[in-house]
Length: 583
Image 1 (cartoon, rainbow, N blue to C red):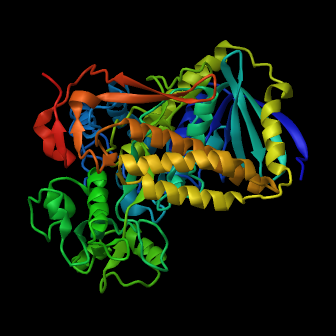
Image 2 (spheres, rainbow, N blue to C red; image 1 turned 180 degrees about the vertical axis):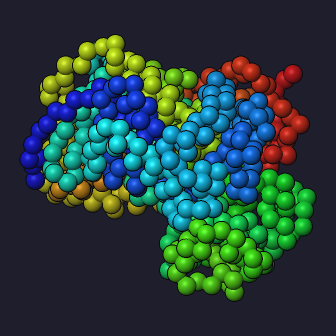
């Protein structure tokens, strides 16, 4: 197999990824007069974490945004403080402040400028996938405004010249083309990597390409040990591995172990009745306690109280009127449960990966340390710290997408179009040729991918330890030496899968090495051998960069407490002992 064509495509601003962050960045850059091209390996805006999100948004808009999905804040100052508390003070406080103070205005303009309906209750009104209610208006706005798009094209390298990013190299899996995208500014918006784990609640496209692209180009990464899990992902034989989203009804359900015990009371302080909805039962919304609930479920199975390596979700207790309280869940229940009657029998559930809280290091203008490269949305780190509040995932892209688009467009006005030729990407071309070359002992990319996913799930998932992380690192070293050289591709589609495995292996190493280094538990990073949060020793961020010799280098940096210091009045929020820093 050989590529039919080699092409060069120019634009002022190149946007990689078409979730909410990427589309808002593209719209903003175009509004400032830049020529903008959005590239995605799937369909533009339709197969990403934003579209398949729950649709809930959090911000200081108490009279606009619903509070039945997630808690809302009365003003940005309180939002900022609670964001730091929930992030366990590992946030970049400038980024967290930008999120909380920009969010109200940026969310309100979704309806006013872009035609997003029911912005306060997308979860309530848009049938599954709920995020489509947000993505479709943004896609329509971008295309009407003249934003160019290129789908079905996987970016395999950020191209640099004289230390600056000047575009990217991509493979068109539909046309068998190799394309060099040349741009004055490049915005990386291809975040999330749920596919790194055997159990997840993301699309098959969320393989973490953006993280590895940035790392390989030399951009510093941060907080890669923090991986977020969604608790209520179905684990029932014959049903899809997805969160069902019964909307209001799901908040009345009760988690039970194999003894029938409502076990969450052992992990969360109950302040209400068992029959109350979750936020009244435990004083916090479910979406704001996902790391605690996921940990509780995993511990039940770990200690032998699971059922078929899962726990049971009892929805038989839900009041009848809650099943028809909203439009969206009526369709969702029919489409995803496929005849399974949750009103009569309990459903097996167990957490699945939904989000990475670490990522590319940026400043408040979404600039990375590489000139010409910007990043926004969930490919970045620092905004959320060690844990993310419900609704802040979408808010992140809504806030930082425009910031990235504006900064990228302004840079594009100041500089000429870079001069790049094919000789600058010859090394990557040789890597492609190697993957396409016949091998005596080939390994199919999908086979390698599945082994990697299982290994990460078993050793670096919800529950971790020095022993399990060491096993993971040993296996990753073996895969790099024995598996990756044997990856075989025969067409553009399998070539895409091969690069995904390569990218995922690098990403997995970042996660494991950072998790090994952090000798405490914090957020969703829970170590069975260190079941405490240690502010005295670990109020620090872990940064990862690629060394000149190709090695992965980790560096600890103390957190900069610009505005707020840890508030220990809220110790109960973390579900574990907190060893405080010196006053």
